Image (cartoon, rainbow over all chains, first blue to last red):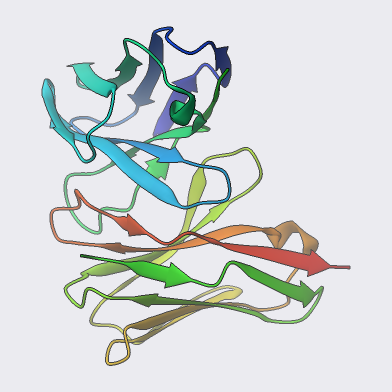
Length: 113
Length: 111
């Protein structure tokens, strides 16, 4: 069966510090991968998606970046965090064929102080 | 652009039925989904419906789709306290790259 892991589960970082969140998927090959941010009490904002190794599409301009160095590994990074980067970050995967339902990781709670 | 709207809160008594409503703007949505999020956790897919269907039933869950009005609903029969969570409506498209999520409806179940 497929599983998705995210770490760390929680993170408190000062403004201006770097960020690296990691997501890995097991039990499937060549998945579509996604990074979302969920602000408190709000819906999901798609940040990045990837259809293959090294292929990253950005949905919103920001100081975050994403990379996919391996088929089942997706990394979210920042060189300098802003207060507005605080939120709940969710990684998800889907198959490349319909119905494209997404499977989410447990999330990372990021607080920028 | 695409938009999915939901009411923010719903409160029901244990044992009653819950109906969570959703409207979407893009009629080209191929798939419509319902996800559940428990506190501090990721989203869990509950069910989905193809845009050419009117209804789908899965145990206590019934999804109704009115394409003319672009209205989707999720009915939970015999609601239990364990059903308390945030429920997200989402619209997906062929290719699957962009799934548009609503803001979520927080369901409170009173014992």
